[in-house]
Structures are given as structure tokens and as C-alpha cells.
Length: 121
Image (cartoon, rainbow, N blue to C red):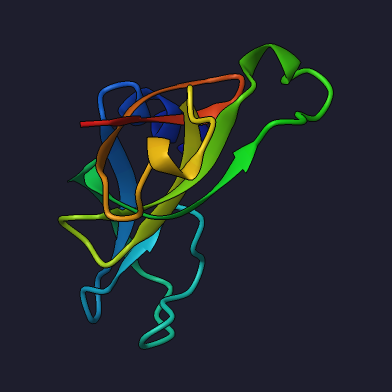
């Protein structure tokens, strides 16, 4: 199974596949090829819980082609609770800033043609 397929399967379970440097232990998203802390190329896969808080977002009211049926929605940056990582994803039903204050608890809930799906907790 490819890394992309693994990321998708774990996202469907509310988890995020990361790479942990075998030299210094720094966690990276699964797309890293070199450790940004020590330069090592050695990694091991680690699953982290997909829960966190909304760090920032953009509300989309005029969607690109193929996404019109989902508007309005937010493209969210989620700061994970269990790792010093941020992941972006799609949160439906967000029309105004009052719908999603920064700091709102949220979690990864799946993956589909939109990418990683995030919902409020």
C-alpha cells in the first residue's frame, strides 16, 4: 500500500500518519524525505490522534469547479493536540466567522474527493 493510500485509510479512522525521525525523534508529516531538525533520512511511521484546535481557516463561498455543491465551507488548518504539527482539511457548513471561532476543538473524521475532512468536536 502506498503512503498516500495509508494516509487516506488512517484519516478515515480519525488518525494522521506521520514520520518520526529515527535519529532525533522529530515528527513530520508523511511527505518528508529529510528530517528538518537533524537532516537524517531515517524515519519510522507513527500514528497520531487527529484531534486538535482550529488554528486558522478560510471560508469559501465561491468554490472552484467541482466543489460548488459544497459551498459554503471552510478550508481549515488544524493544530494537533498530540504533536507539534498542523494539517489542513475541509470543514463543511461554515458560512461566517461566527460559525468557527479560532481555537474551536475539531478532529479529522475522514477523507474523500475533497481531501481530509475535519469536523467540530
